Image 1 (tube, rainbow, N blue to C red):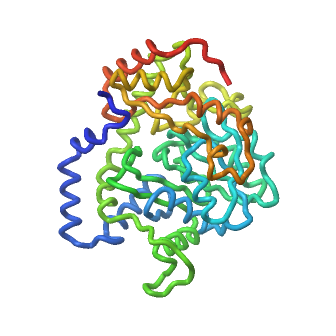
Image 2: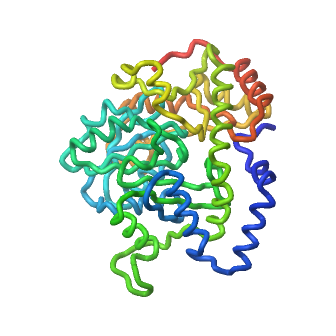
Image 3: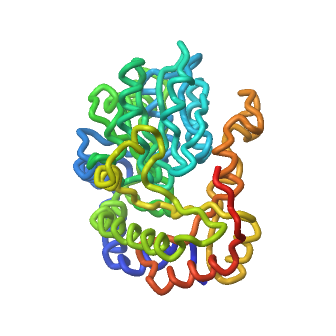
Length: 387
């Protein structure tokens, strides 16, 4: 069996290092906001090229706390994508704001920047781009739009740690970048964990306060906050893994490029594209486009006709795969009150009906990639239409 993600193999490689730091944390008995949390926050800020970082309980909490820190709430609107995990709009809704959806670029699966300005209203306060599958969004255009309309940018980097756009790390373009360290992420801990990255001291101080029940001084609380602190044990594990992140990202890209080569031209299969298809990106020279983004391939996601049948056949062949995501957010029951219907965002709907993520993780071998690609080629259906 080739799993979608092999966490056992990763642990086996790092077992001695991870076991050692876990024992050290247990022995020190400093379990809440201890030295490993502080050190990890500084290390991840340095890695991303940012001033401040705040470790929190999950990626969803990171988004929620960032929105709170920017005073986004009741009556406000936040522009985002309908093709992502529910945590994105969950955070927007929890602060009392309303998610406003913009359809995706069908090539990259990220928000289509050409459609953002038309979605802006007097109530719009922020743009929340999601760097889906580890593919950076077109941040030049998003930053320009935000500056022209006085909007904040909060980046959802749950799947994109280490990805760059024009050499700049995702999570550093707006007021806040929000990360998840869920176990299967490119940098994952042994449970839930998250982080808010920012260059703004006020945002940093407010998130840091809100994660500790809304108080700067113990037992003195200035506003309603959360108990959302990155666990000391998880921080120690993440510090070990951070040292390997760059090499893991290179391995993921190697696997992705092997898939690209082996699956090129396979009927019924459309490959992911790192470069957006907007007028801005399509006007770039080829050498400029190749340097525009560096994806980290949290997922390697293709579009296939007869997706469910292909998924079942891959599983029967001993190849793990998954659907991220089968129902776009505007059609989720929880968002029925927003009034969107089938057909509102056709590219997101098209992708949700055909998307299939293949195994990708740093330890995946070239032989395994060949087996996966060969199996998919045998079972895929021909004549796929382009959205």
